[in-house]
Image (tube, rainbow, N blue to C red):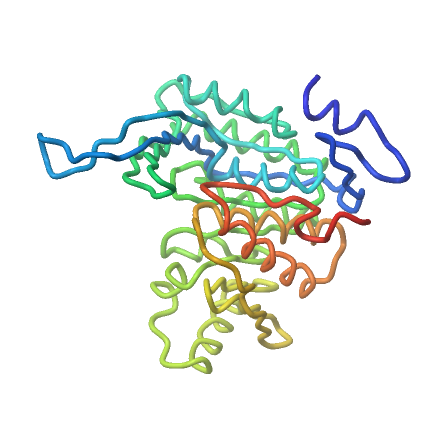
Length: 331
């Protein structure tokens, strides 16, 4: 039995049972469409006991391996983990990695809308881990063909009416070539659009509901700020120039700052030991989008997303946050 069938099969005392855990149905019925650059994260785990005689590098004796959904697929995985209906629209290669990624989606409770490009290598991030430390990461990637991306946009237009909110997860791998038209179309349908941005050309995100850059991503766009007041002025100007409802700046150990027409509002970081920041931005935008799709106020959504980011950095690799971790076991 698949995770989705288990998820929907049993309803007891106004709760939904999935994987032997009882999850309150706060997000059940909300529908989020994630569009962007999917990745397959491969992990090799082992031990290091010697240095190679061929070069001054550690020799890792591999003891095990694991594959996980990454990139836009990790955003979708985080949304699904909270109980919302989740769709992933993406382009993958006609290769082993693409087939593996496609097989993982239903296991995570995700409805996949995948387009296959025979010229594309599915993006793979291969990490070698030893003693809970990353030794090396190898990336495999290229960009999709224009013909496949045109079909990708056509399906996006067809899917919009069936979803409440859109998350565009931009990793700069080419899957969001039509992002300007996607934002325009989604807003025409009255759908909120959240964007995790990449690169320095933020003009293509104009009209989105909310952007979630981190400090390193924002700095090349607005320039170096001198102090907090200068940062606020620059962030608010960017928000106005792009006609955004809000800009959420994630600030690592400094928490998050939300910029809206009403002003700026900050939430401090949750005091936790940072173990691995991989995929933390995916978790933040996934939780934020899930909360907003459920009709929760923006500040409340930001506070919960901040809590989720603090939890996920304490886990190894790309990971999810459960409802119980965010809200406790009780409804």
